[in-house]
Image (cartoon, rainbow, N blue to C red):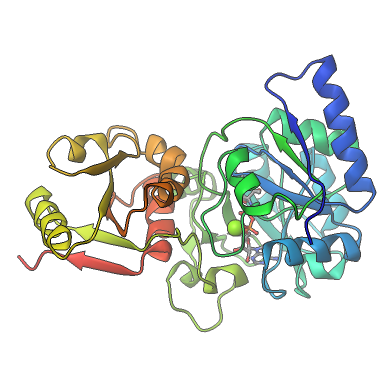
Length: 347
Ligand code: TXA
Ligand code: MG
């Protein structure tokens, strides 16, 4: 059944927006769901201390109950309230990257609702670096459990319009803070062992983390097929656009051959690529997702571009594959999960 969803638009934090912040935070205290902007993607938040409130997140998103949620707090010093201890390596990462697009997995002290962590003895916790998110968290004065604010399995929302599309009528409110910045989710780093492990690449790059930690392991959960992933969310279908997506591995001549071949089969082909590659292709439905000169632009536009093909009734999206360096690692991790196939040049 449809419910009423409040919608607040905030572009600058001032007296007027303060009212919206207070209203949204009050709804969190009443165990309602509020979607809000972070520097990575929009989150769908609920009071992490209340099982009933957290259960609504799983219901609204259609999220499997064994996939734990990240807890968001306003300030780094609040992390200690919800974990058994902060190991020295975690402290280093906190000092270097928080607030910012990183989530640390630490041993939980079981103060939060059990369904937040899906029964695990660890907790994922992060301090978002977004003025509206932090203002909301401060106003509520609560730890807020928040997955990305999309229907489970779909690309994460980088604008309030995406959230509206997926969740309007299912949640109590949406705080529209404009476009998010980073565009891919936070890097999830497991700090419960001797060596930190990246369970999900994201806004803070492996290279940046290695500079702080020296050694680092890349979790097997980053692979598509694993039997027992450590970040349980990584085993589900993810980021799938409504239109089938194929990754194209090869040079521009091969890309063009694939466009022509599929078009001849009668398919309306959409292409997602860098402006550099698009300049070399002949295609009816091109979408630039940024520049190879700066992979952060690709990350920032990735999900919006993936979502945009549906409105144009495209039958199949062909996407460029990007270098797996810096934030390109997170971009390719998401694209590989979103794609139904990869087409490769045989030469
Ligand atoms: O940037 C982000 O991280 C966004 C914004 C809203 O903060 N949130 C986000 O949440 O991406 P979600 O639920 O879409 O992804 C959380 C990931 C999942 O893969 C989940 O399995 C993993 O983090 N995770 C959460 N708690 C965990 C835990 N205790 N141990 C291992 N993995 C955990
Ligand atoms: Mg998500």
